[in-house]
Image (tube, rainbow over all chains, first blue to last red):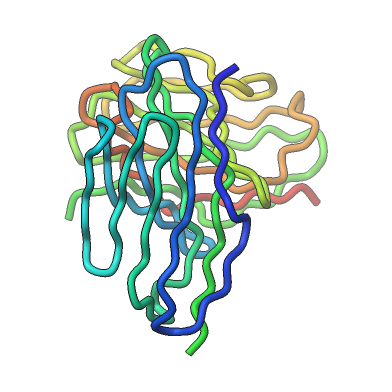
Length: 111
Length: 113
């Protein structure tokens, strides 16, 4: 069965304290892995797409990496405005073109 | 500005009632999706449509219905057959139906009263 697991469920950091969020997946054939940011009561906002192992993408304080089994979202020197829930999703070969989401990591950055 | 508009933002439903959630996009995207989000859970796919006048069931379609009469619009009806409809509903669209870089609306929070 295709599965996407995110860890930790919740993470509290001090401002400036770098860390990483994990998204591990067991799927039959990965066509792409997506990261989204979701603020409370809002729709997810697209951050990155990764397609192959070894690929990396960066945006401001965020950097996403991909291996054959997992993806990491690295947050460097976070600020309170980075507080949100971060979702990962995978697009699977033969999946009838739908995303399978993990349950998210709720990040809180304290000033 | 291009985007996806969901309405209403909040919706209250009485037991036994059908309600319809609106989703409109002006991105000229072919594919549109409806997801349900419950606290502490990931998004689960209800229905999706890759072209006008065609749609497919997702993982949790029971108790829901959709239509796709126009490219821009993909309304979701939550019927009385859905026994636990209280949730946050998200509409999304993508350019080519592969799910890549899906753009989301701001969601509708449905509560049964």
